[in-house]
Length: 525
Image (cartoon, rainbow, N blue to C red; front, side, top):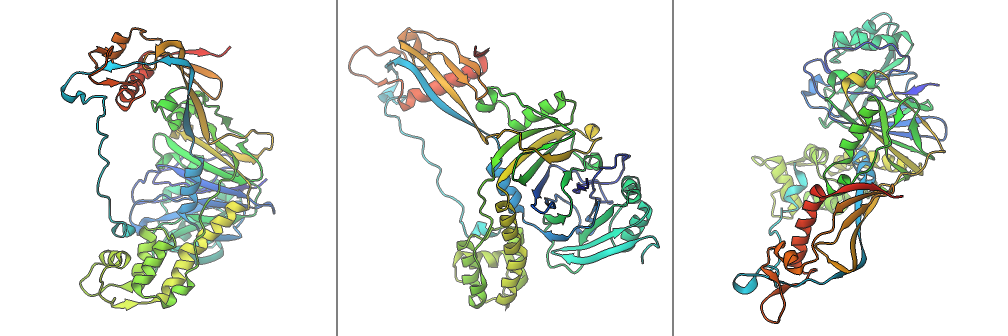
């Protein structure tokens, strides 16, 4: 089968490639640029093709940007995507650890005597004042000559990118053509690209267009006539962090898995619920236990509902500059560098006024001078082409697929020696996004106070963690442990019931200490 391939960020240097299923690369010759995270979306289409969206992470000079991708066949289509697809998929599938409280029996009530004038601790204490102020919403809206053996299949402009699809029998021919045509590809990349040229692969290359209107790096979306997906791990070590997090979203009608990497069944423990550990660190540890090449399933289930589509803006062609900008806010157009850049291309501020400052004035509804130039028709077209259309296509991509699998891993460069391949498998179980544990306070028959009762944590996999052992049953000792002088035994003075705000804070402090000091593990029988 042919493999869909994705590009990773690379800098100077090379590593040998021998396996036929190796994937693509992203080169920058001027300086090493580390890849902090890789996120890719695969859409498995009914016609057997794959729609692939790759989020590109880049920091450096615009003229140094170059991206090259070996693919088994030329893509049917290349387009720009939207970062919102990745942002919303990540947010909707991020593993979450919820906690539900339960009580066994009935805890004894505890009233404590607190010292001090007015008994201010635990007895009608004023709540902490809410934070005041807040940023102004409007001001925050804008934060922000060919070698003889080369065959050029197509050239074009996609968003801010020049694109070319070419092939050659050797890597030096590919590199020479790209360098002669302004692509910043280092000579050292020949060792990486050589196997692809020998196998008859086609190369897709991108660079920032010299006459571009935008410098904002955007995701790339490709439609590939292939029915499998693979990830270019072999080309990544040169520019990778010591542990590279990878998140892959497989949109299909059933679950997805790697066919040549292990499945990382990440064990659950109480620290995931007490924030003593994170899911990412647990995945990283489990992957290393399995030899460095494995994927965990973060989520597998119904495709989440995303809100990527945006309202039409054709009616704004007759709007004033202020109305135009304010309507974009009201209609949910996302603030950020791309929107600000598009607006600045079509609204020139009055002389002597900074563009961002002027746009913020328009957004806030303040008294703003007339712009020196305003092109509402061009602005509508640019917003439709660069924001609205990519978001609508991403919305359609998500809605075409009823099932989503999110796979994650964290890999060291020395483990990136085999490219993982993926396939769909309807025999795999669902994996929920939210893992719920139950924290049980074991009160007994008024045997313990709320602050001293044993507490256990029941995890979704059946594991039980004892978070706190049984404490005192003496009310004086219990009260003194919370900073009181002792138990309250008569009327007058101030008291704090065990569930009042004051004692609740003390209870949380005691519990927090118990979580890290007095726990033991026991399995359910």
